[in-house]
Length: 235
Image (tube, rainbow, N blue to C red; front, side, top):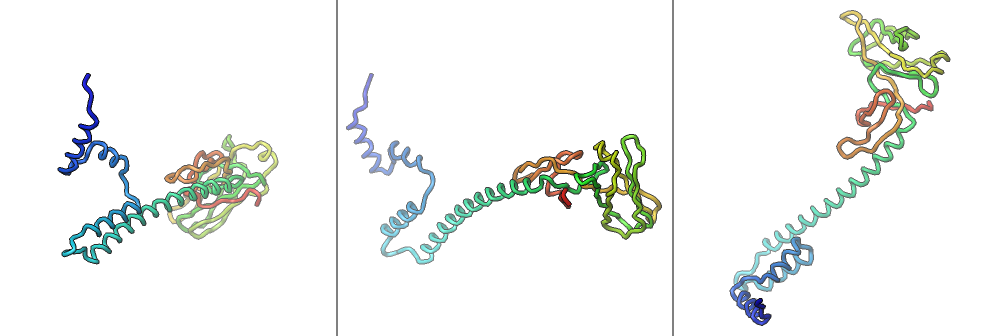
């Protein structure tokens, strides 16, 4: 088996250097570093100044432009680090938000409702137009009406309602109730989708796209960003 004479390799490298071709060792060392730092830039700038044509030196504007370009690149790198730090802080904020919503109720559109820990039911109607007669009706799983609230005439917009004196048999059963709302407008009697307060069972931090996700009793997962209002169960 033939061997390579180290002296021959060194001589070959010298020949390649004279004609401006880099050796494999030099090429490999250059490939290992594919980014330039501040010290690299300063070395390049110093070498450029030392080897410039004395009869045609670099213009001040060119020198300033190169410095400005390097400053821009450095600024972008620092901005990237700042955004990464901000992303971490937002993650901590999502955790704090998720924790604070536990033990509260959030307002969600729907017709399923239960009494809260204080034995009360609260909700809101969003009337699209003025109503001459507005009613909220609660019924059990058998379809029997167990309670109704007469809100009378109301202007368009948000109208709150609550049921405070709930009978003990309903409270002790922890049964899911159905709530319906009706209004009398220009076109007669029509239904209105109520929004009710439902208990937050759990919360997850999600990610940058979804944000905090709430697990709401009887309603499943809801984005915290979609919640219009929350209420402490201790109120």
